[in-house]
Length: 459
Figure 1 (cartoon, rainbow, N blue to C red):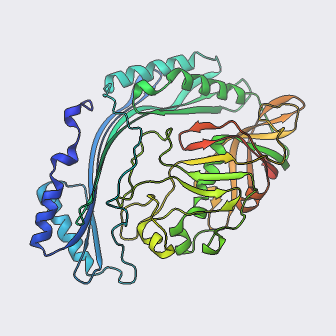
Figure 2: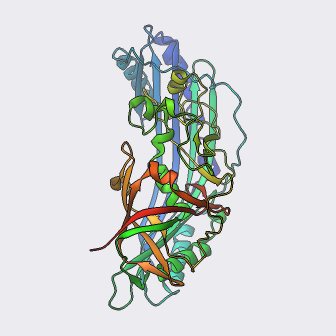
């Protein structure tokens, strides 16, 4: 198993893709084309009671080629075969498919594909190798198991490091190229007290490299979270004052991100439309932005799949829907600039990257705090089954969660329950956004309080 050594990097550069595509374009009389290419090398390990459960190393290359024929219809193809013959077949396949391109909606090059890219914090770390990954994870598992007698296993765990290289070029002279590192650790432990059902708790940490990950902090967070859930109690079905953890609220906003997605609006699958821009859709003290260039957004590229520089976009400002996320095609439809949130395709999809949620002015009740045990409320730590419990085009959600009931000065773990509501109403029912923000793997957010949410306990 090989480490991710420096000499193994820059695989896309060594392929001489620009030269190969240029020759193919000239020989096939294609004047307009672009490509997106990705090369990744990953090492990952999993353990089970000190033994290796999985040791994996992988290397992946992929190239997506788009061509415009003389009728300006688009053809696209992708391949993982980066040999000369593989690239040639893919290019010829794109030409053939261009005869069936959609004449009514043809993508163009991004208007910003040749503009200057923003500077980002990008630290390249040397690989520690798979043997070191195994030793570190094995030690982390052992330490976690010894933190409490009720913790019997760490069934879900993983430590990995990855090197990813991305390239975008087109026939207008655009050239984008960047290599990044990312490492990640996750620990999810299981435990139970006598006469009780098993409970779980976990934590995730990411960094540029293994040396940037605080393994002990991940162990402590996992252990403390699991221990806090061992003595659970049922909760009565009712409506409650609810406080969402930063992770939980970011997950909920992410599940309804089509609200901010220009592609979803054009496709008719969003809760919003173009007329909603400028409207008040949330409480006036809520502001949400998507910030791919945020300093805590580890290992982010500074350009999207279309070669557009990534930008920070203010989505909700003081409760008003202010902007949307755009690809090249949607930006043309809305007569704005692309925002750097697109993937390369015949019909480029648009997706958020790194939400930042802020309290933009004083809330309704500035005295609320997730550390306060004198009130009665539900503290939701994490949401589950977002793929099944969210109807993004309708706005409704019904999601299982892990959390606690705070009542009579005590913090009691909830046995099993679901939280349900409508995202449009929830955004208007926020009582307070705490001022302290927390960095998570998916964004930045404080704790957020919502009134009168429906909680259904286990029957």
